[in-house]
Length: 482
Image: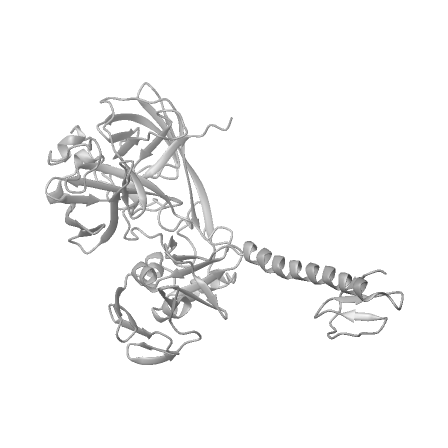
């Protein structure tokens, strides 16, 4: 007796000395009539076992190949406690993280089983298992209703995004959904139609920017501020000349009020002091050119300055002049009087985390410190790998022990946020002298221009001490390829 498996679409059982078909897709050929019943049963059992194993393994392979879907709002990833789910082609996500990432106030009426998201001029109401939602009181039919899955309230992502006027884009290769808000599009100077054309690969509506000036094309300009702690972006066109300021001999600390004290010991949320910085990825380069530097400077009396100080290091901050804010910390949230809120905690190993970014305390460097090395900063802008609307660049700063420097295409953060002491030397080669005081580096160019920006030597990195720096709001490092 022999058993042969063949692919087929037939079904049923033929009991003669011929074919025995076992369900969809498998057929047994039994040769040699008059075989014993026991032999037939053994053959069938073997094939049933093989069929069962294949049916078990195939779904598992398909599941393993499909990685979880990631969701980005204005190119910042939204953290969910429960992974997004796909219901008949509609992606459902946890309502609260999505609404909050989109800047909406959230409410949940348990008695009515009603989810509500509100922002200026917009109210969205979704009732659990109802096929119709309300947008500013107008009924809108849903492909899939909001529902409760594993104890979490899930809402249809595309409907929410488009109801707010956002662009919603699915990247099947990366399994990512990007929601790009109207406010963010406005900050980029791009219309909704232009962005949709770029994402679809149709660039006929706007020309692509050049690497030398990513702000060209599509009638757009680089965002000066996206509302994050790290407000300035990557390379910017600085062809508009400004008259150089007169030489300023003040020490950096003389710019400040004298209230700043450096952090020491384990951070205490009840009395935070000093400056903390941390890096996070900017996946598409729109916010800060690929790598964002979050900065928080805390003063006595629950006062904080968020972002890069306008005149150099934290010692230059004058809260009355520079716009510090008061804050309160409660239930893991830091609420600023300006309306912003951040998650905040101290980890078990004594690290400060704000918005899930681990921050390190900034320590003053030795007065008059000099360095030796060629430092680079690499950045990029746009949807690299998705459309042609992208560019990348490298900025170089060579520091010498004798206090001189050379620069190539240098564009420092204070220039991009409109707070530079004088004009920067971007998109050009230049030389000059530098000095370091506190956490401030002062670059004086040979043509009389001057830059005074934040400076930090990063510790706990893979590079040797002094080879990983923060200058302005950018990470400059010695590129050791060997």
